[in-house]
Image (tube, rainbow, N blue to C red; front, side, top):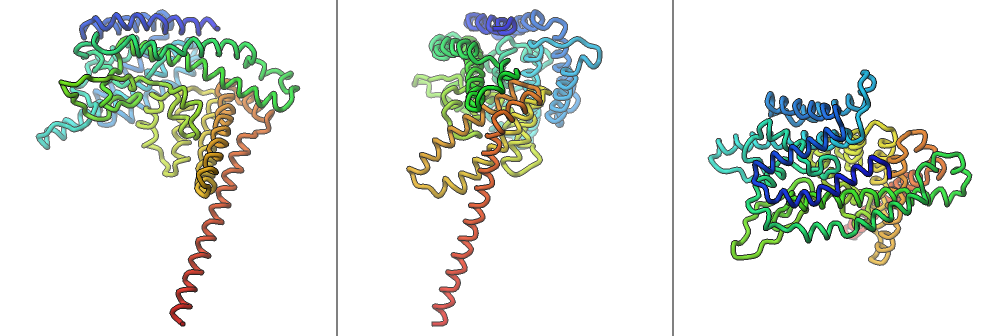
Length: 467
């Protein structure tokens, strides 16, 4: 493991026992202590680069104060433009930010855009309440506009400051105002979330030692046979998954120990978003709680869901919620594959400027278009047994598609990514294009068949009338 990874591991490990201590604190003390600890982590790992995140926070706060109506769009433009500056700072003679500063900046971008949307919704609902003389029915809305201190406290809250998960300001405010945090579940769900982490970590170290990524960039790699080169991406994506399974499960455990994102099960919480319904528990019945709001990974469904588009739902779930609510609805396209492509383009930009991100993320719409075409033209015509076989083949190809896309994500450079994809003859891309072509042809044949059937029925009607 690299020194940076050891620092991440140390912060994750320390956040879990610290979280249990936060349950003993009153709301004001909890807010101040979480801010102080977050600033200590930020300054210790980023140094002066902490000023980047501070500029982002203050800029967003000014936007909200000056024009809350347009704050969502303006904050998105501000934070994303600052990301561009942040990644090109060396062009301006400034030092390169640390990887830790990059991690904080990424999560802060999500938080600031979400905060602008939440405050806009707060003001709009307030206006509706005044005009209608009724309380707003919106679930999870703010009860007051956050102060500058509140915004800074939310931005630098130590929980998930570098590793995620993303959570809304309302989730943070609910955490501060928990009436009896010591009574909320903690130890059991925390251990439940951590129980597989040693397995994921051990598999990550073992497989990574056998299949190092650096080998892919060597000339000797191309001398191996095709199946070795093809299977190498399977191993790389396995290592990639084990690494993030370990990190995200640990990050979730840090949230759980502090009680962040704990809501009654009846609130039907969504990862990233929080409660979706107003829930008033029966005072005479025991209340069951969950931590769905801060769930960032569903390891089982990531591996075993059938479809490419479903695979995205279970990976980095809180960020997927952010993309679905703040980017996807505003895409300039109507077709699902194109809307997904636009969203993936924004996601690639959020991750960085490396060409590998764009090559990987923009392969997703191609795969989605392929699976939609095959589902409509092939699966829909099959019986139960045929559909079951189709789904198993679909799952296998979905995993290989993500294997292929992962190579761009980890190789980063366009040349390295294209060299690897060409070494396996762009097999995933070719299969996707063929599937789209077959789907279109079968769709056309189906239309012709329906048209001929319709014309035949008309002839029968005419014949019956003449007889």
